[in-house]
Image (cartoon, rainbow, N blue to C red; front, side, top):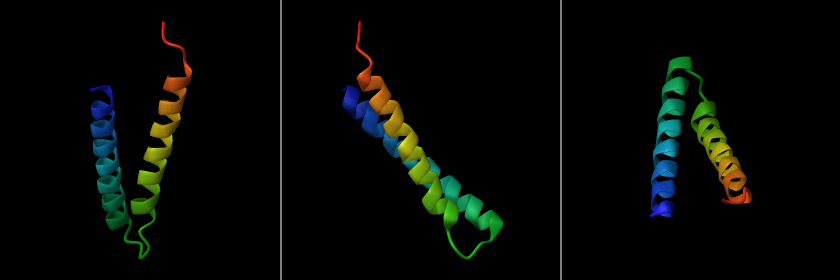
Length: 60
C-alpha cells in the first residue's frame, strides 16, 4: 500500500504541475510552452530527490 500511495501522489503532483504550467503559459502568452515542460520536470526532480533521501535514511 505504501507504493500505491506514492504512485497516486506522483500522479496528482504531475497533473497539478502540467495544469499550472498550462495556465502560466496561457497567462504569459508565449508561443513556446516553456512552463508546460519545465514545471513537471522540476516537480519530478524534487520528488525523486525526496524519495532517494527518504530511502537512504535508516529506519528505526
